[in-house]
Image (cartoon, rainbow, N blue to C red; front, side, top):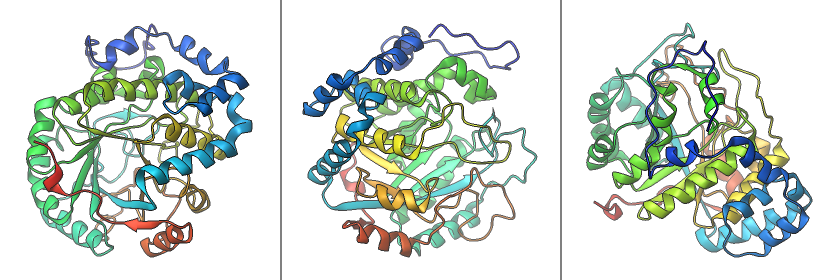
Length: 390
């Protein structure tokens, strides 16, 4: 990437690109050239991709291109068929547990951004215990720990909280600030099974325009976090872009490159992708690149066709109507009855601000009924700690 940052952006010193890691790939590609790939795809390219059993990134670009829009029904049907073949007639449910909304980053799209004058809350051991009990009472056995990004909620805090939480859940993942490889390894030793690190956007210029200060403004350090997660031997690695910050097709092509990079190097790990669209929040922005419901369906189907082993997750950001129809499209996991503020499940939030607005607020029982109406079975446990590799 040759793009430079605006002189107005207050940045930390940037980590250098590292040869052999994904930052080195990004450093040497041109965004406009990547964008041109999907713009130039035609009907023959789409048909070729649909007829292949093993797709490359070029095929993925064809399937998310405007040329593929007339083939949407065929793509969705094939996506459903491949998902059933690989994952069976099931869908796993999980809950996010927000431990803290304290953050030292200034990001334009997030309610937790440090420039927002909001009530901040970091849960202590007693409050975490209440949240765990409330989540378990709903049936969940897979939990995702989420925090803002700050040195005050870092390794010492995680090392205290994970041993309190892990005994209650078969699978524990986290979505927090990027860490060093040895830190991921330590957390795996006390119960961590998966890590989600969303790049938000792969275009450096745009990334720096939206991450104005704080550790998150370090583009390369975040970009190489999945490499460090793989090096630490973490069981599952999650990728995602925030759909709307940049051209969603180009960002998705870059993420497909990222996935293939990781799969070649860290083949012992599983991989997942998510599809967050920008949602309203305190101090939020207007999306630069709006992705419609129909285009999101196209993107979801393309990912399943691109990789039939990939885990795919859908959050409560999306509307009940969309999630109702999306159950059969290729997803393997879905959040339900989510609270995006610390203390939200046990009503200890004390008016602490949520990260973004939830669109699907239905209780777990309604989500379960909806999934079964679509011919799927709800799975609470799809992993056992005894299966984790050392």
